[in-house]
Length: 279
Length: 161
Ligand SMILES: Cc1cc2nc3c(=O)[nH]c(=O)nc-3n(C[C@H](O)[C@H](O)[C@H](O)COP(=O)(O)OP(=O)(O)OC[C@H]3O[C@@H](n4cnc5c(N)ncnc54)[C@H](O)[C@@H]3O)c2cc1C
Ligand code: FES
Ligand code: FES
Image (cartoon, rainbow over the protein chains, first blue to last red):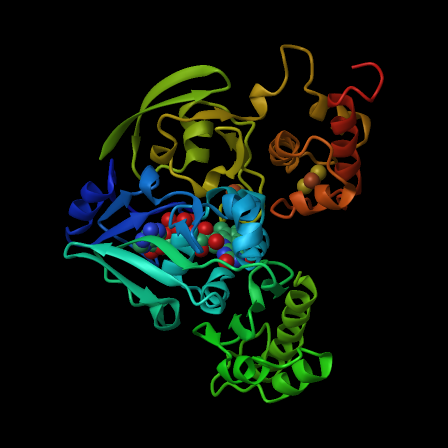
């Protein structure tokens, strides 16, 4: 199984990448671990691939003055191993460590993961729970958008064809804050049937899910009812019992009803893990 | 359209012309004749095609040869030193870590990447590290034993090597 024909160009810097991507029917190539499988199945048949993987300005994690900035080309491996993220957003590191397998984590990137927006991906819910901003550059300059709003449909985002995600930014967690990611994975593919990301920041609680619906979502009602609470097991269980979604995914792996059940169980585990990690 | 790529494989430099769509595994097997790297599923799932690219394990069916331009690659052919088996190869032989052997090059290469990151993995870490590699014969138990044994040998705790 191999891809159809396409042109391939390696971009030397971000400006060059944007110029190359402004052509007809072009696609950015980062780690290739979502795109190459699609090319092989001929589900994607771009005329030209613009390899952005060499753009150093899109790599790495920095935490400074309460802000964390994670480059789009940071690999899952780097996220999982990042010392800086252990304090600033353990949930991101933990979710990345649960992506696929070591070979996938060595190649796949944060930017590719969220641009591809597979409902079963692990990182989208993490960005929702962290209230992250996605920074995007395009032919008309740069813009940024809240993660809540970036994911617009099944494998669909707010990103235009000729735009590139440069990085993701969020307020880093402080002393006394904590976060966790818990995942129920498909035993063969390793993708999330349900993934729950919980962030406790001061008295504010945010909980978000992957895998449960076509679009990752923030369980705002659960977060609101827990914000300011004592986060006891009883409070968590009672908040989660009201969890609802009007259109959960339903397929041969898990029915809608089972997915909602998993969301309550894994949401509870993520919230308790985060609660117990607070300093 | 042809692309000229330069790539170092098992310490030897190659310069070749490839199509953009050429997968790295096909480049290694068909253009360089290095058929030790196996193709199992061709869909990123089985790990039989695992090699090291710049020291990290990669499924070579999920990378284009053009993406590997300028990198240094190690395949199973680069593991032994002449007639002397690499400790991982010796450990797979000693611990009956293979039956049909189809998955073995991928298992050894993913283990090489694992031990480079973590020279003394626990059994659990070894099992987690094999998540992307499928074996239809052994039931994994002896593969895990082989890797643990190789780690001991390589750390100088295992006696004679
Ligand atoms: C066997 C296997 C198992 C996997 N398991 C999991 C799992 O359990 N959980 C999980 O979350 N993921 C999983 N993945 C997917 C993996 O995380 C992908 O690597 C990731 O989703 C895509 O990142 P990439 O860098 O490889 O992107 P690519 O494949 O290079 O690109 C994917 C898409 O994003 C676009 N893109 C890439 N970078 C940018 C950018 N900076 N700006 C704009 N657009 C961009 C591309 O144009 C393309 O449309 C798995 C993949 C495989 C092959
Ligand atoms: S052949 Fe590459 S993962 Fe199966
Ligand atoms: S030994 Fe036969 S597939 Fe592993």
